[in-house]
Image (tube, rainbow, N blue to C red; front, side, top):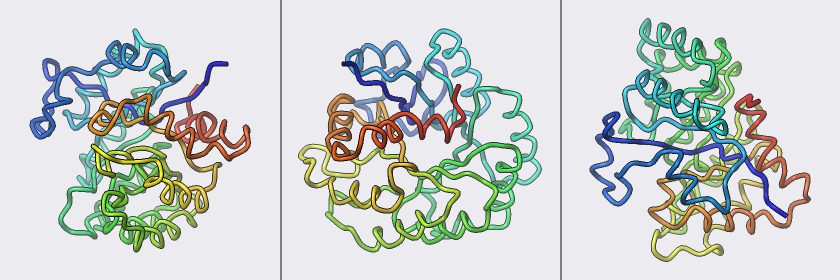
Length: 280
């Protein structure tokens, strides 16, 4: 029997179309990655629907390019767009523009590289994220463990916005550290307006030697705190290729949650992504 699932976290890029300066640092995945390449690499495990997550190109140009791809790829049914949420009137204008693009379901403004761990708590940032909620758009949180306390406060201050934590908050799996990530993660999960992606974990482990046993405590904690009703699967292709194949990560994720009931697994792999990103 074939396995049906939705992938809530897929990237596409093509440096002949748009600039992605950060790809200089990861030359092994810097070549073109588009829907045709994705299906060629995942033909045995192709998701029924795909949510595209921004890749750092100019935001409106990227949205328009992904819309062109979606016109030829019906499984591409949602976009998480790049946007600066702390730009005042420019943020308000960008939100109005994004609402005209029907595939856009949410926004991501990267937090992970900011030196100030409280970067996301400036008045401008909070105001922009609040506007997102009022506009019916969600906010993807991409942060590192030391930034989780500020992220928790951001989520508290924006109760009308739906948040999705990418990659379980990027725990330090390579170092085997569980704390203080574990306590901060529990505190975040206690807030009702946040969901979490089961994604990006193998690239937070040792890319060359990770094992399912190393991932298990982190996934177990995610299940214990968010539960199967607020976790959603993400493949993180093609970034996942830095640590393994897409199929290996999918198989690993399925093994890590194989003890769940069929209904709980369906929620994690399909229903939650559809709910969170309002997919057709």
